[in-house]
Length: 479
Image 1 (cartoon, one colour):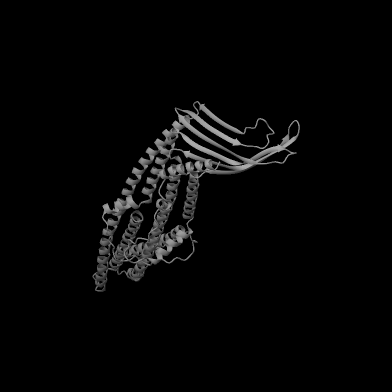
Image 2 (cartoon, rainbow, N blue to C red; image 1 turned 45 degrees about the vertical axis):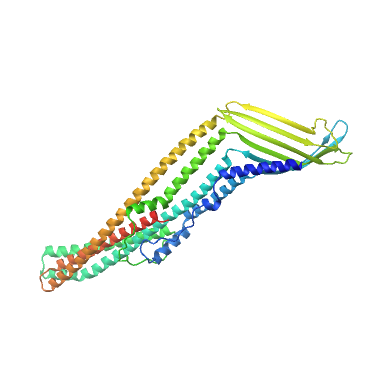
């Protein structure tokens, strides 16, 4: 009995190792690397207000919490798949009482039963590897959701800064225009200017007032959008910068370098690669069914039976069963070998066998047609995953190119609008001085001030586009 136990244990260990070698690397190797610190694309200084907004958004995001739970669920699935490498162990106890023609009897047996797949052509290892990649996919999905959330927060944050700056610009413009509007009204009453000039002055003041009202409305919506993406109360206080930084930061990467970094670090591309690998493993797992599946079942314990008038003595009993199953051409061939032995001190039922060996061969016709369908389906899904990976890479390159060109365009436009704002300011000063010596009308001064406000507003819009382009690039190329 001990020799049999040692022999069976050695066989089980050998085949477990064989299946495990086909499996993946260690658990620590398959998971994604730990999150690196935030890569700053805006220079060496960190925007503490924006960082605080992002931190609050992470803490309040239900989507991120769900993604985190998906990681835990995938980890549990991987653990369940890893359990498949080890035998199925069952403890059992049975008691039987009854009567024969002559006297009542009783029987009892208990023991342990071990069931272990010996050879499945790597299907157990492939299943484990697939679940491990599912775990990695959940980690990548979390990173993807987090990046999308950070980009949404950045866009909403910079929009609030833009609208605050534009509100300040138009408020300042109205403060400068208002005295001249009152002056134009007095001049018109005393017929110092024509009706056309007065109408022009009034139109300039109304336009500035309308722009301020529009900006205030857009600022209100921008605040709500920022609070919404952060998951905070619509009326809560949030610290936001009052204006953009004036310096221009040129990213130290070419478009080609950005494309390479994006293809390496993009969660979308990495997720598509994992889906392709998963479908490859599933295809291999399905194809493994064409090979014989071998398993072994071993049981050992004690049993006995006797008439109730006699003492019940339990003796050792054991059994070994081997099973093989092979699917071919839609049919299934099965074979099993079963051997058991027991040495009861007394036999109540003469049909009880003290030693038995059973060989069984079974052929099932056309019961495995689904195997062929599954193989074909797995191949089609695998090809779809390959096409999806190619499309994902192409879309990533397109997104990088679009963001990079937007960054370049915004930077050039920002330089241009800054020059325009400077020239408009100088022109307004000259027109104001000319008004003092009556070389210019009141409406001319008001129009010059309005042009300054427009130029500064356009410059603010260009800075917003610049910062959004930088945020988009950062979310695409950094890991």
